[in-house]
Length: 360
Image (tube, rainbow, N blue to C red; front, top):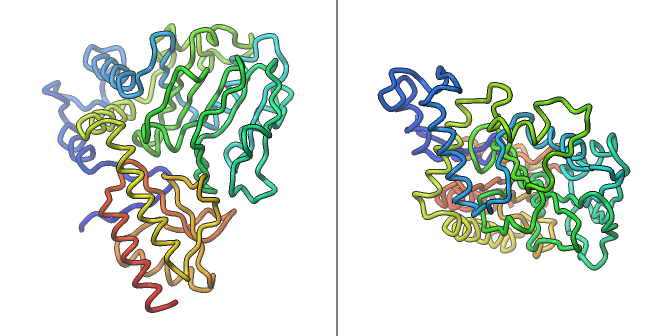
């Protein structure tokens, strides 16, 4: 059976070459006579994998020396709780921006640990835009300012980095990390789940500036304390070793493909083509304001919702999988992360046009 084009929002499609490399090394990693998933995380074989993983991420994102790079568990959802427990210090307030489902979840979790000032909120527009920075109500004396760079469910993405004095900027980049160039030095913390642009689920990347490490609440579990994890090279507990290995393969694939600049160009081309096809159609529409449309997650609805089931069924028959939109917004959603080849987007556009010709 040939591989399909998988438009899942996460866990998402992986580069075929990465899967083939993992298959090749499954039983015997580089002559070691064992699989990576069997290795001791303290052994020299796995330690070399871990060192390459960290080095490659630092190189790709150009992470400055004054940042710790952690590979943790618990997903971005875990970080919703661990961030305030690690960096509130003596303060009791944090600022949050609500631009969609995931930032909304972050707000609710943070409210368990501190007073949350919602500095900007696009709920009234059904999360189809991002309020201008000039309208944000940011208390620069708060512990930090949190936002979600890309909302996978609503298909909204920031184009610029907000800057409000010296308040540390904390950003959830789960669904667009490694998809475009960023200036890490502008952030206090960047965190991301691995299951969209970096590999399979099971690894959470945390890039945290040194001055924000070492201030955890005394009651926080040790495995969630950034300082203790940094001291132990993210191995205070046994890490998800095979997942680290797979993330490492994806990072090497990005490097071999031309790096983040190449990813950025390809992602813009893919999303531009898909949005153009939607705009030229009388059957499909995208509700997000143009300047905030995500390059990673493209939601769209059909003018006649009664056609949704037929669209999904026929799409699946044509090798186009996981296009159903999130239950909270309905319609369709095409997630086109780094590993989605341009051929997949072209196939989707061709199918959409044919479906409109026969059903529109």
